[in-house]
Length: 354
Ligand SMILES: NC(=O)c1ccc[n+]([C@@H]2O[C@H](COP(=O)([O-])OP(=O)(O)OC[C@H]3O[C@@H](n4cnc5c(N)ncnc54)[C@H](OP(=O)(O)O)[C@@H]3O)[C@@H](O)[C@H]2O)c1
Image 1 (cartoon, protein in one colour):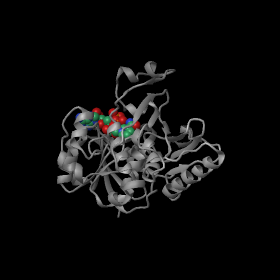
Image 2 (cartoon, protein in one colour):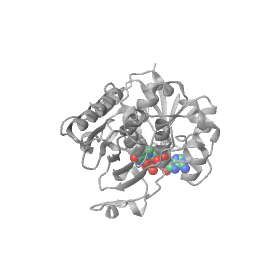
Image 3 (cartoon, helix red, strand yellow):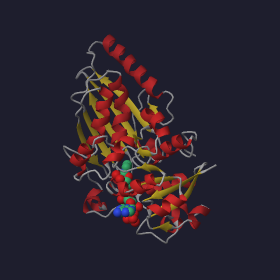
Image 4 (cartoon, helix red, strand yellow):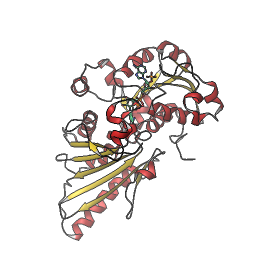
């Protein structure tokens, strides 16, 4: 039997990707899409690129109404701004529905950290302990059993997937970590703001959110859990003039010194074995070999994250690089991965490139 799925905030960038994935999903049935601005229009009218799909010509956007959604859907996916998502999650969970939230509202275990980074008290602190961080590679079993998935942020996914295995294995120090990330402009959402107008972004590069971007809260919480001690990192995000894609470079200090070719080779083997143990059987993480480097053009439009690493004996650092699509592995693809796990479908259902 198929699962009835609704998307709240389906007219935004990540909502649109959810629509695309669910229209073609082999086991899920898209039953409702909401948007205040597009209410009354069909999916095909709002997104002409889906117009050849019969469901897109029939299904109309509605005003978001939790009571209505709870009647028609088994699972509700929230692609809403943070703060707003919780307003829908609370009644939907109370009505017995399963919620997959793409916002930051349930990603943190600590309501105090949420208030510190998001600038307002957490709207439903009691729900935080029931939420599962929706990073399937690390929380698959917990996702299977929850009714509230907090899908990770785009930058956090690009940093945590390369870093968690190394920290858990004690191969890198939990101190002095530096992460530089570059993101396409869809990362800011489909909203009209001067900073994201074409002429403000095109042919230009700039950092933002320095030194305390909001995503640091969930990145540091997850890194601390992996390291077994409090971890603070330096994170600088940059806006780059592409529509989508995130590239991250991590600068890390291995716990074992390496200078000679033999020491470097020995450490290389340990790092390679660590990543193989973590990801050899993961469907959406590609550890690159040889000279290949993560490249957003190889992952945009897919749910894959690519990573590669190099040891630098001159500086004593390990450099790890990753690339992903911010709207797929960084948002909607990962959320559908969680949907598949929750519903007992093959984890790759509806997510493999055609
Ligand atoms: N963009 C990314 O790369 C990315 C990656 C990971 C996670 N996320 C997270 O995913 C969520 C959605 O991001 P996005 O980039 O897709 O945002 P977006 O493009 O700005 O879309 C937001 C959606 O929410 C609806 N909405 C806004 N305010 C609302 C309200 N008060 N009540 C009901 N509906 C409302 C909007 O439609 P109407 O205004 O027509 O109602 C729209 O459909 C955010 O929490 C974001 O942080 C985004």
